[in-house]
Image (cartoon, rainbow, N blue to C red):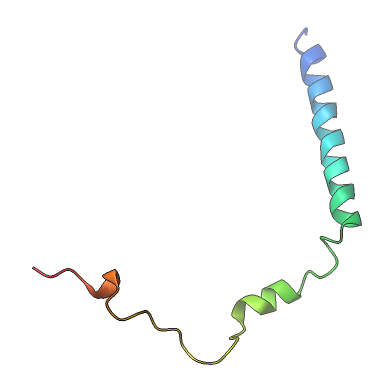
Length: 63
């Protein structure tokens, strides 16, 4: 029963911190545009595939 005097204040502290972080995120605009990041991940910016430099290490191992 004595552990509740430790766990309850810790739980209230964590809940208060979560509320404060959520309020900060809302006020700073973290939730303003939720859809564009999903589309930005699948859009191709320039249309041409990127190629590596000639002579890079990813050509394979000889031997």
